[in-house]
Amino acid sequence: NAGVTQTPKFQVLKTGQSMTLQCAQDMNHEYMSWYRQDPGMGLRLIHYSVGAGITDQGEVPNGYNVSRSTTEDFPLRLLSAAPSQTSVYFCASSSGQMGQETQYFGPGTRLLVL
Amino acid sequence: DAKTTQPTSMDCAEGRAANLPCNHSTISGNEYVYWYRQIHSQGPQYIIHGLKNNETNEMASLIITEDRKSSTLILPHATLRDTAVYYCIVRVWTAGNMLTFGGGTRLMVKP
Image (tube, rainbow over all chains, first blue to last red):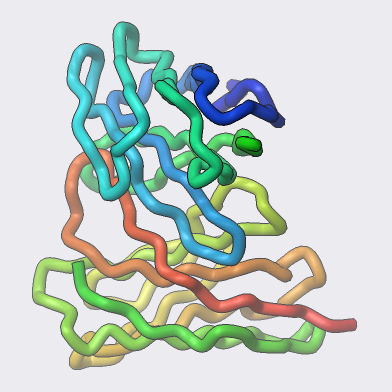
């Protein structure tokens, strides 16, 4: 199993540009989520999904869109990038089953918005 | 979710036990204590979790006080590879278990 994969690893954007961060998992997990981590800070939840076709907002959803058309993929879209969105973005997945609480995180995407 | 308090940083000698404390005095009866760590900008890694009883796995032990207001993560024989930021998270179990990460404790294991 590859686990949780994220692409790209690095990205530089100009203010106002849009882009999509890709996230995929091969563990057949129902639950997926996106976090951002600013320098020296903990992770903050952006959006999450409890299954294909179902998404919801987390703590800091503004400026981001998500969709979940398949179990495997959970892309994060930046609509109009702003310097405040410079951060490291982590995708995570979990089975959602009691007793299997582990969240598996991807390696992250480092985004710089100029 | 209950608020947690952790020291900002700690040092530990290689080969010794690392004891990382976490205070969660407002924890409620159905909230679990989770520990994750993040090694140098990698994605966080699950370590262990517990509700009331002490727990042990291949990575660490979790000691929860009887009143559940604090806990300690123990790495029995710390290695240089254990240098990381350790997050203590307290919350009710929910399917999918999306977590709220605070500042964590930066553990430096020294030779």
